[in-house]
Length: 614
Ligand code: M6R
Image (cartoon, rainbow, N blue to C red; front, side, top):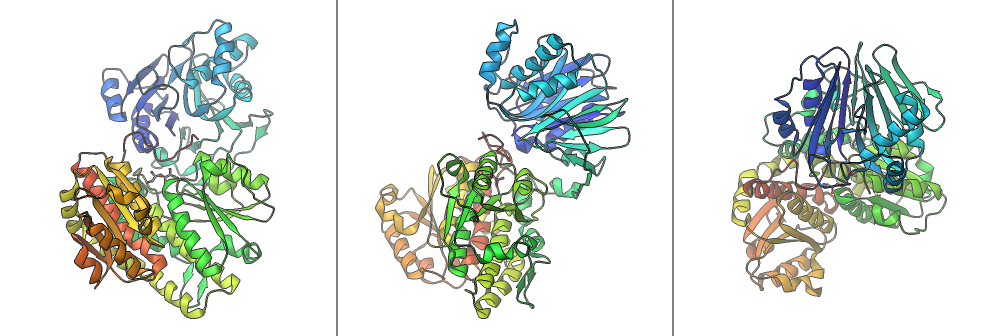
């Protein structure tokens, strides 16, 4: 997590860095800091958000400095505080660093540096790294670039760093392992950032550093890239950024989350455009077509993911087993990577991740690959680490998702999964044409159907008003609606801080039913496909314990409606598609409750959008 931004060129660095940090604030917002450098350097940092930094920095002279770097932090080592904020300076005050990642062996390095006379004022691993660089630079009489390279060979962990040294004014050194880093190449100017969003209005040309790569960017000598491992010069690959400014702005909505909820019809359309060919009875996902034989011969699939993406994986389990008769296991990446999973050569592992940077998922992929698995990635962020680590994959094409709570990322992941289920069914010969056509047609109609569900916004807002002060919520569903219930509960808890649990509806009677009384709102996804009568019975059981029931039902439903205090109707679709439609009112419900409770839905406390620490 954490976001870093840097600039070296001829413009005022300050506004570029502040604006860039605001765009990267989704990566962490515990504290923020900036250093500007020309003839002299200033460091300003503060606990809190980038807007707090702006206020603190207002009393400084920030004009006319054409080199600088900034940081927005998600705390790992050391509490959020002014002192622990980045940039960190070396003991001499000459070297400054911003860092996204974790230095795992910082304690040993700190001891070695202390033994050599260094002192530390913060609790961070980053301050250890900047002093290690200084120690190597001064003790071996090296330029800062070389000192960074040697220091990084001694470091265990993950990093994206930018370093400046007062002895080399007009130079920035950057390096990457594990955490993302992009360099924007302009005319006589360079931009550095955790993703390309801080510099898209200045240049479309970018280099995404690979792991173990570093670069020295100099005003006089331009740009040079090296391998951290052996110091060899690397030829950079410059790419064109496919990102537009309006996709990363709020576009008239109060919050990114609300914008992203409303973008779902469009996003889903982008996900299946050119891939879902209903009339030809064809799914055209190149990552599958290029690896057709592997999928055809699949004897089992393991899905690895975290959070919302893990919920999408559960839907995939139901669908792939049903439509393609392939056994599927869904694993939390963080658990998978630390046990001794049975993965054999030729096994298929599907990694699902919006950001494509989640550290646990990335490590789980590594483990799967070491064991000979074929790894297929479902990612949103193009060119992300997971997308690059996978052997094949499918992008969700949801566009940038900036709100920390996943919304369109989830429903577009499900869209990819539905298409994959259809194609795997074809490859395995386990889906008949009629079923294929029915699901494919409904999938193609989803954007319109989602529009119709979004129209219930006002009704959902009213329900939210009634329950905004609840302390607990239960979310129930069966079959495909069970993952949708889990996702609904996660959405509510992460942005409103109300405790919420998702359960398979039939599990209620094995314990959670004890929680139910008249104060417990229970959200039930009780659509008419699957085990409808069974869930009606479950709703009866809850009703008899006086719970307040908010149900998501199929249009025209009678039975569940009679038992419910509030009903949200969604159009009738096949079972596998219900989680997509049902998620929309659940997202809106969470959104409204959180707003009414005064929460910042885009930046919920303690969270960050991309979790690049384990
Ligand atoms: O980028 P990823 O999909 O790998 O992220 C996984 C989780 O961190 C993420 O889904 C998280 O649970 C979201 N905050 C959910 O809204």
